[in-house]
Structure formats: C-alpha cells, structure tokens
Image 1: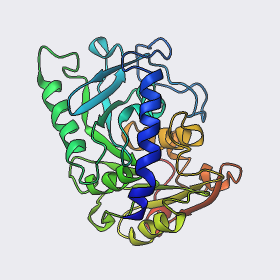
Image 2: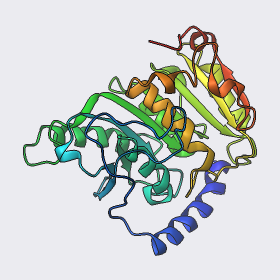
Image 3: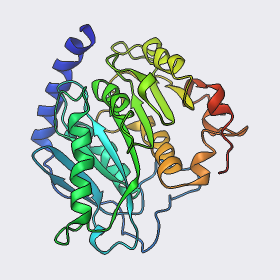
Image 4: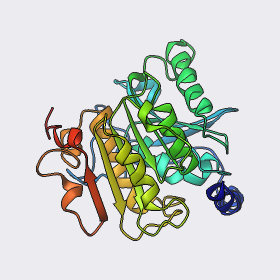
Length: 289
C-alpha cells in the first residue's frame, strides 16, 4: 500500500533519532496525589497530570504508568496503543507519558507492524495476569473494566480492529490507515484527522466516520496538523485524547462535555479544529451521565 511505503521511512528514521537521545526508563511529571486524578484546570486536559510516571520495557509491551501504582488507593484504567508503520512506542513517548501522568496505564505494543492488533490484545492479557499476581506492583491496581484502544496511522487502524474485542470500552484512532473494518466496533469512537495530512488524507478518516452509523462516533480534524504532528511533542493531540479517555474510562463529567451535549466544547473551538462532526447516535448522548 502507498500509505505504508510513505510512512515507513520517516517513522523509522525518527525512531533511530529518538533512541539516540532518549532512553527508556523513568520520567517525572508531578507528585502523585492520594486520590483520583484531577487536571490542573477544569478543561486544561493538555496540561501535565498529577502523577509522576514510570516506564517498563518488555519483550512484547512497553508500559507507561503512575510511578506510585503499588501504593495507589485506586484501580487505574488501561489504554492499549498501536504504533504507525515502522514505529515503536518511543516515537510516541510524550503522548503516552502524558496519559500515564493523568492516571492511566498505557500498554504500548512494541511491534512496528500493529495492524492486526495481536500485540495490543497481548497487552491486556499481560495486565490481567499482573493484576492478579501477588508479586506484581500492579496487583489489584488495574481497572480491567475500563479499557480504551488508540494508535496512530497503521496503529490507528489497529485500534479499530481491537475495537471488536469485548474488553474494549472506547476507541480513539489517530489518522488511521485504511486496513480495518469499523463495522465490527461496538463502542464509542473518536476519529482524529489532520487538516494537512498528505499520507492519511482526511477523507479517508471521514470514510470510517461515515461507516460508523451503528455507534456514537465523532470526527475531529485538527487545524494545521500533518501526519507527524502527533510524533514527539503531541501538541494539539494531547488535550482532546486525554479528555476523551477521561470521559469514557474515568467518568469525568467535565471531559464528557467536551464532546457531548449542546455545549460540546470541541464543536465551538474553531481555533483548534478545522472540522468537527457528530453522528446521530453521538448527538443523542447527554453531556452528563
């Protein structure tokens, strides 16, 4: 496929560049609070979260998670992640750490070919075992009842593929490649495109949105974003992705109002968004549960 050939070289080169400058390990955010995570301001979902973070690199999965998870007084929701073609989790480190700082456990598949979603599902399986292991820091701290799937490009398509898994509660594909069937997805979806994306053109993402008439679905096109805006510093992708997962996996009412109800925050933000669409099922979702 042309989109795969175009993406492979730049992502692979970027992976090597980031590997030379950033090693896997532990990264800090802020001191972790005792209770449920909050954001710096009521709608500032792009700001650093309240949790210090840690990274664990495994053979199949890299985990990004709140550093104090062993002593946490709560269970933390899960986000499984798929990389773009030729990419590895390190390429998306800033975004994945941002989510971990908000209180999520991120299970990022190490594979540069994620389309089938096999390694993403393996991340859920691993966390299920770790949650039940008395010797694990994750013992009884993984919220396996609230799991989201996301990814970029080929990994975005993988998030759609994984959306057919009954353990998944929501999907957030970022500039997803075409090799997926959204008709199999059974949960709410936020499909993100970049206005200036010349690899996965916005009309390709809109095609997924148009086909998703059986689930609450939103289409968001970030103004000025190209295919690699999310790589490294995630910029405008950090806030809406965080808000979406907080709304669906943490029950955050302020985050929910960014997408649902007559006030729909992203619908009126023409500075950030060049196009926002909500299908009839999404329009029927209230701003408050």
